[in-house]
Length: 299
Length: 337
Image 1: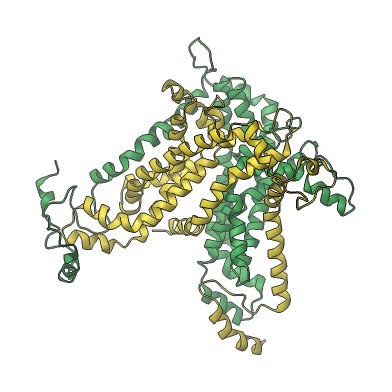
Image 2: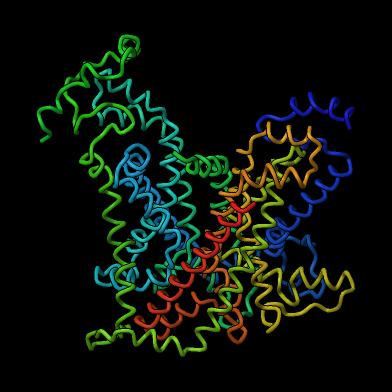
């Protein structure tokens, strides 16, 4: 054991940055770890692989009693058929408008508030933080009925604007949480220096704090976009006519009445609907995880 | 608008020492110095601004929050004490606790509530254990870790509706990969998982576990990366085995995050809707009818707004009590060790 330690000590220190290496990890344990990781990867990836496989399969293979992992004769027919069956382009357009507007508005109104949450000591900041936490526990069912009635009175039922308003408020808790974390990461000394230099508060915010926050703001906006793009429940309740509906709602139309769905087009449409979220998520993945940690740091 | 005193510069009691040094820096822009500052003044430290400025900054977000979040919540609680229905011309009446009395005897609702609890616990607990295992692995120096990290996050990025559709394809009795694998392994013919009375709920729970893995893993991984490494090394030097090191070093460090994320998961899962709506719509025979689905149907299919709001209130109340018990129990359990 002693020898092992001597041999591993410097190696371990060298190999690891901030992560902990396997201290004294034997070969058997290492193999076990790789096997476990492989099992996780299979579990996490196989449904998605199956979705893609189904999307590219011709109808004949889909009807076969022995489905294969890889389509024997890959085809784009399912995609063509999906666009024929449902107004996918229109739905994607609606989703895009709703998600982009919601993300932009959310970030614009959340950034100043997040600044207060991070920098201000007072009842207002604690109340805001309290709301962020409590709103996570909000039962949607208790909120959706009043929302429906309020939006109905404002004549915003079955409009994208009504949905956008709901999405803005609904994405605020996470946006505030993330942005407050980013604000805390900006050293107060910078602001103090700007103030000493005679920059006014507004000026300090605009030309000192905002540029440093920009990457965080972009990441938050993208996250808000993804949440809105993926959202289903509010869209289902608030949008009635097919021309207004967003992508997730239209996707459920493929399922038909009693489950007997046309699998190929269903898979093709579902795959397409996921792509924007996946691509954007790949961009901000690191920042999201960083933002969660930053927000979690006690102050 | 701001008082005259606010026009003063920070003054003699400003940050000591830093001035002359920073002036050199500040010259870079060559901008004219202003001698006034909008907003109330104060020492330019942490609490650099007064309440009025804070209100001003908070207002744009506060108004929508009040109208579309806090307001609806209170409105919803009030609705629970009325006979509100959709599309009715007669005005809504206060009916006191009548909805709650009805609810007490509504066996369908309580059955749905029980399913909701089974679902929430059945998803949250395995999800936590699996995510903890994955986070521990991802915290090691393994090859392909980047790939595993990227893949572990994929379910997070997917629309819930797509997750549901995807698993329907997996569970499909004829064209699904699950039954095909079972046939290949010679374990029988497989079955129709989502419509079988016995299999529907477990099948749906598995999807729930899959879908929520990323958030839990990421949170736990963040906690793991804050564990003091020196302690780990010291414990290893003292000859503590992997399990002991986990118990004595890792777990105490990640416990707050673990508690927070599992409590949040419990709430999120209990409130979940889209996954099960797409997978089974609550069937077969109500075996997967989560309380959210029940309340949704009550409100938007049958138009019983007041009654559905009462259901929402009961859900919140019970979940709050359960959470309080869980958190208090956990925290106390930690102290006695």
